[in-house]
Length: 429
Ligand SMILES: *Cc1c(COP(=O)(O)O)cnc(C)c1O
Image 1 (cartoon, rainbow, N blue to C red):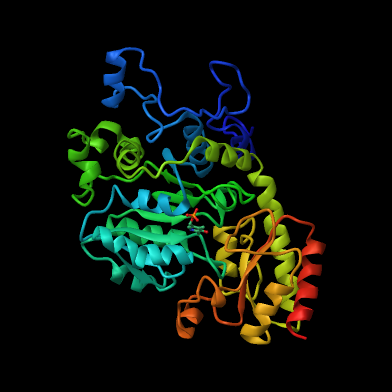
Image 2 (image 1 turned 45 degrees about the vertical axis):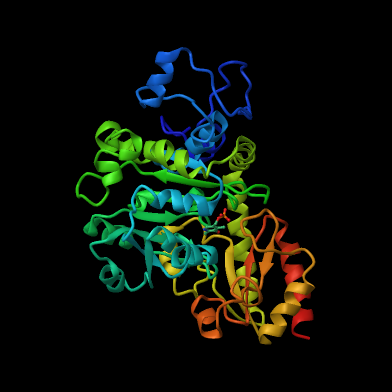
């Protein structure tokens, strides 16, 4: 501990978890129970009225799942948080209290591929929409906001190219517009960046990636800073006005900085049911205990591999923001000073065919549609995740036919480089 404020690694091991009150169990027990016995009828009524905090039913809250939400909330420096079944569920859960039919979000165009689909297609079924902008063009971001905009959305380090977003500039625009900034912090993790310190209101995670860390379970987290004034305008009636979906409770007036979190539990999880299960929460809690150790190795390996690749004559370009050649190098020093993540793209001489041969020729790397695993992973977006796009769209998305995306693991860096060396030999023979 440093003074009274525990450091990151201490919180990663301890936050959200007292020894079990009933048994003294030191590790967080997996509370494999759907319901919790009320002390008496009055106790039950108080829980349902949110007059007392406690467990009712595991679609809403479960002790193991709450421990996880509280731990990530502590790591991100938020006021409250919820865990849910996947990263995509977390994104819907973050938007749900803010949106209504006819409302829109303004989102960075540099996003995880699945998020582009969720925002451009699926949310339309709810009557919501997204306007995509290049977040390096701050005037374009401002111009895209209209009276129906309810949030700005971006990723700290964006997939697939390792692009770093100027979170402070985005938060300033959101503030001026009276709307929250939502940051997907999956690829940075709170070890590299805490978006709330840069002015974000909500932080979302795919816990599937680095938080769990070894590719075992899907999960998602939403953390609220507790600092946004939901009552400053009439834009967020679910939080600032009597909520008809919860017997007329005015969440912000009643619960202050916990309004978003309680709404997400009492209405969002209750009615959308995108709940994390206690077994999944257990794996993610175990993963987070070593988050700092793993991230330190992930970024050290990524930096070494990016430097090695950039010098290789078989490689055309490397997009890692940890390299001085990156247009986002200076920004990375401010936003993610401990390292620019471990996810980047590499353009290979020899185009599409060479990329396919590289992916097939690697032995240590796994060819999968995942990232943030302890293992090194590779994918060729143009033949997989970005296959549906035409070539111009692929280039715009940073997924041109000659590009592979790699997620650097925590293996010995010499072995990672040796595998890429032999793979590139096969690819460009
Ligand atoms: C994987 C991912 C998601 C989606 O998360 P799931 O857990 O797969 O639903 C969202 N954003 C980013 C940046 C991701 O990497």
